[in-house]
Image (cartoon, rainbow, N blue to C red; front, side):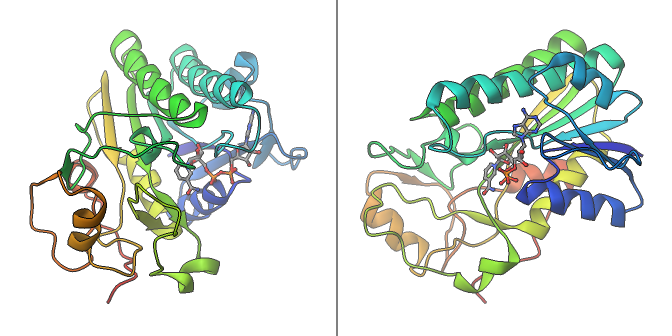
Length: 276
Ligand SMILES: NC(=O)c1ccc[n+]([C@@H]2O[C@H](COP(=O)([O-])OP(=O)(O)OC[C@H]3O[C@@H](n4cnc5c(N)ncnc54)[C@H](O)[C@@H]3O)[C@@H](O)[C@H]2O)c1
């Protein structure tokens, strides 16, 4: 299995490269930081450029695309949108051109609402699943909604298998001890969702390797089984979303997002939870 991991110098990318190597994959790590290692393990490339995307994807079985401006307020909104859409489009286009069948990329739960929140999000039901309506509130979240449309387009027009992983807050080991934590005092639309970095790396790898039919696009919510909040889930819903429909039992600190589709499709079960 030959994998290309983009955004490989980032938080998630580094963990995905480590995990994929531990599973015996051959990995080409790509990012636009610094320069390549001269050994073919790490290549510096700007993925807003289609030619560079084609070159790095040559000969791969799958790409895990984590390169992006990874949050709002890092760059201007226009640059965030243009960069993220360009990378998602170019990576898919390059995959189609050079014959890489599988594209996994990082969408975000911010398709439902954004950080920082501009206005109250209206969750209609809990647990929130992939069919819940989107409400992107900034250019970063919009780039994820458009990215999912790009992934859908390449599945249907070019026969690729594409997976849009809607990641929640990805929690690295160094801040794991901070969880569970209170909801921020200013937060008026909390959805205290998270996944541990190691679980995130594993689900990215599964998404790249589990057998799936061609010409299909899969949107998958990724979540731990519990929330990161220090108060029970039903009390959060009653306080912030009193009109929402409750569609499943949500005992204790149960997640407000549904991870069922990822479990069904990929066999993914998170191993980390912050509430015992
Ligand atoms: N970390 C989270 O909590 C979280 C949550 C939801 C979604 N995501 C998404 O997951 C992905 C990875 O997130 P992360 O936290 O590792 O981000 P990160 O900022 O740590 O890493 C992103 C990497 O992309 C690289 N990059 C940016 N522009 C590039 C370009 N033009 N060409 C090549 N490389 C480029 C950066 O150099 C960086 O190393 C992003 O798409 C992000 O939006 C992250």
